[in-house]
Image 1: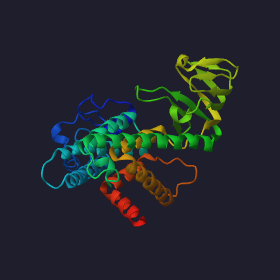
Image 2: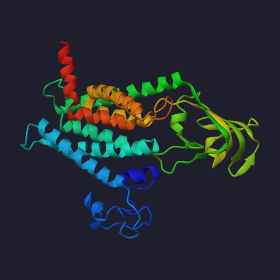
Image 3: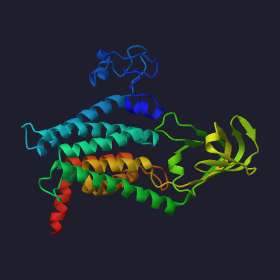
Image 4: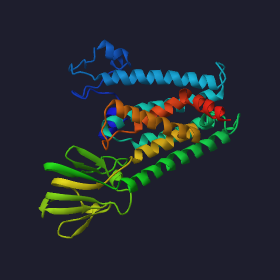
Length: 355
């Protein structure tokens, strides 16, 4: 439900019940039992018989497996089966896994990571660190028995290193890669899409390209250049030519400058445009901060290394060409899960071998 609704700007609370995307039939509880209902209905809506994507079954099964693995990790780190306060960390960790699953599928399909998931996930990371202080330092490099305050401190350090470390990568990537030119054999439609919610941003569309505002304008000097064959501004046709779009203003071919706030709609046709080339989106930066809040600075470093290896392997196996866009969020998620499920033991073994 989250994977379907968030990218479309739909509320996750209204309507409260799940519904069929085809006929809008609200699904009763008896027909909304994870895994079992999809099998019983043979992947079809009972009301209109429209197919229900297998992705729903896959997401539910994946979430169930990850929740089980989290429970196992928490019980082991809390000292076995006896109940303890540390075992309450299972709740924010379950939230983390649910958010990871949602982010993975959303980023893979839409190339975005919703800010609401990463911000709430970061807060859940601080909570998990306070409940289980060893979580942000699983290798115990800082202290073998940290207090809740020590765990929270390591969590905060992890967030700082994760967020600002990857933010620096984005910044230097912008400087290194410079600009990206879009070229088409014939003029294609382009337009600016206004955000549907406060958490979303303006999106630039040109042909099949879709780029978020914060991935275009990272520095004050960044500008989007469009060699427009036609221009429609606020429903009126204006002189064609080169249009310059900055973060907060638009410069028209006749030299006029208009504040972005005064623009209700802007679009037209063009065969070429030049945009600042992005190395990575800010959604990945917030996700890395969230991972740091859960697993500290050591988890951040492991996640960055392992996610890079995962991405290289996926690009090689998928024969992804150089310069083609590849969502990085799923690989960060995979790296973080690897760390939680035993990657920290690999780091411990490696550095012990260096002594």
